[in-house]
Figure 1 (cartoon, one colour):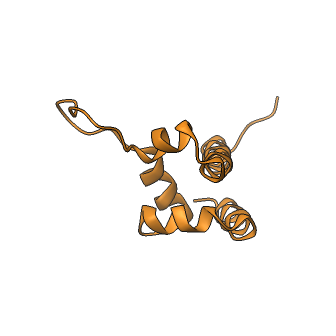
Figure 2 (cartoon, rainbow, N blue to C red; figure 1 turned 90 degrees about the vertical axis):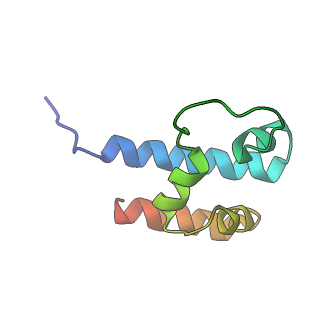
Length: 90
């Protein structure tokens, strides 16, 4: 019976989210609007939900979401950021 280390699955999820985000942001289609959250209309009531972009900014060690959106454009930089965050195990 093998045991997984606690937190390994979270790291894997964050890595896959970051990889998918890089793919979507470079495409620049409807998914881009969904991930950046730029839709018109009413906001829902109650506590705001945690956004994927905010979680990735924390995981990647970046302070601003805008920094992430700029880094995504450079594929090599983006891959290095993901690899470094994954190695650190945050």
